[in-house]
Length: 223
Image (cartoon, rainbow, N blue to C red):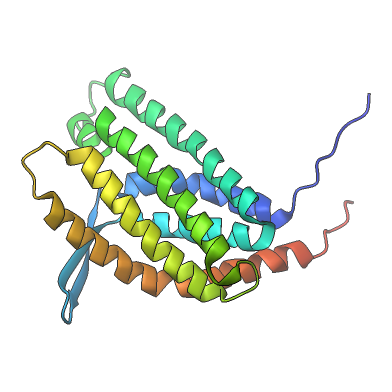
């Protein structure tokens, strides 16, 4: 019987593994609100910590689009739903179906920090899929696409996709509740735009160069 060997670029393999892990980690980190300090003209900024992982997802999907094309980047985004959904199911089961040990006293805190209602989980899936797909589309189309204005394309695509992500998530999660949605959106959008401006331009250069290096480096011969 013949064994089929499917060749996969090492950069794509590495980025895919990291992408799946960060997709799950973004939700966990999001339970902490982080201070970004005081900014001139903008005031005090705060953001949910999951944005640090989420911006890395934005950078990696853009890097994959640059190295392997828009279709491959869209596949990466779609496969990202798998670890997201599995992690949501596992957390729900562990919180609600698996009883805590009698001597463990942190069940309430664990459930409060990591447990999300069905509405917020749905909002997370919709905002993730829409914003990441939009990011890949814009990155692949602005300024003529691959090989041109790399940093500019990544920056603009991340800015616009983060605005859409915030609007979708907050609207779906909290619409109909007695909460100042526009005020929450404004603060989150400003904070995310600041972080996108700081993080995305240098990181897209790093990941594209890393991808090229991984695919150029020769494989070590087996003993």
